[in-house]
Length: 308
Length: 308
Image (cartoon, rainbow over all chains, first blue to last red; front, top):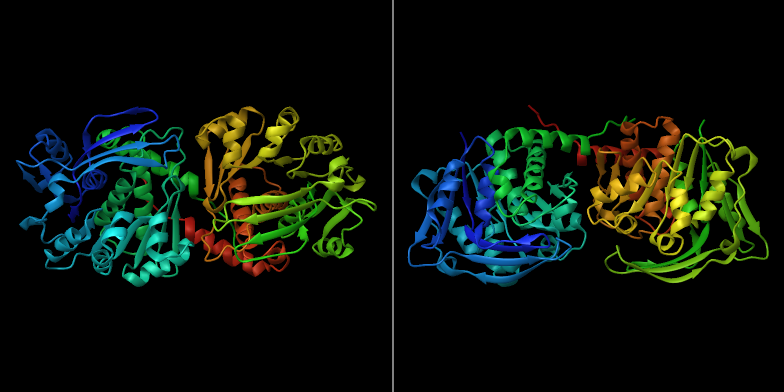
């Protein structure tokens, strides 16, 4: 069984959307990535840090999904990373109201012994020097290393980010971030420039407009499933990334054809994530629901056209 | 061979994009629709009106593409419809600088005798009462009637528009227009409401984000081909519609499965249209180029995933 190591935030989120609001609930990039990846038959573990205020039940919630949390350091006299955000009526736009780094400010990641032979590594959105520290703790290079990042690190830690980007196989970023990173408006040109920074595969996430996967010269597109209601987009990008890497780890096949399926798997899981607040939908998801929706993805995208 | 009748504007356009500008060139919805449809082995004709200032060579250009222009009335002492627009750096945004209706203001469409038995009817973006007048001049209902419209007619001629919408099989509009027409933000909900206004098939065009085809309860998505350069988006929506109806007319098969192929054919042709100013690319397009790009569409969208 593949071993997938995930580094990223485990956090409290407080979310307001046009449809309601929450108090502090379970959130964070590593949380969403691991819940999505837990839909596959793999052995996954998280490297992260929380404070003494982090409820034990939240860790148990992850453990029940067969997610190893022994790499989540608990700083008893510290406070857990907290993010508060508010979405506009156009759910593509959100304001960050609060960001309290807390224990994340001085985070020194430590990969548990039993994950130092991970075959697959997912570097969730975090300070690039933390991502780099994790790479350096894995002696044998994993089969596939994927990285997610955001504009904040491009603005503030460009050099450190470039050093990590040079070491990964796959980068997942959104369209605006791809434009910022490359200085190119066209996503085709942006992907080319980002290839040259290191990653062989560039995944550009466009939210409700789907996701593009670029290999050198080749492209694949996965739409987002058109939904009647999007309730809360929080975690959708991380869920996409978790579905992507989870599929790759489960199949052990790093061909481009299989990566296409991984992008579909990620889009599929993200379509569930947005249906309820926070992690609620991901915690109550059946294999049958996932399979039924994959059928919908096929109907949505597959056609039969005769070519001469 | 199918007969396709197209009603819409035949016009002068003056276009400015970040990449250059043109003087008055050949434009108009019916022009772009007919050029796209001319890629198929069908018999198509235009109903429209131009002024005495419209160059005979422009009509000959269409005739060379086997497009019947006998339904284009020429008002010798009138002036041709003129549109001048300027695109922003974000080519999704444009300002209309000039709209001179000229001969279009009092247009009374007249369907030529030899097109009164048209099997397929494409009502391009125009005053809904003109679209209705064309419907009423065709004694036997065509196999398929498609309509394109825009927000201007929703704002100014809502009742007339609703009367036409009730009579068509397919409506093609963009995402913002679908939201305005239905009062629903979700495109899934918008499509449902628009179904209830008449059309069994609703095509929502999202520009660079592709197009959605809705039947009652079923959906299909065609991406736009990711391009290195988009030079001029003018006419892309009409080219999409022309490719769609051209494919339908050519195949004579109005099943949903075939409509999926029509949406792909429309996206395919639209991807060429935007590569040069105005109609230039559409006038110089080979069957081989079209087929090669259909291959690209397949690679972009087709995947093979095992379902349980």
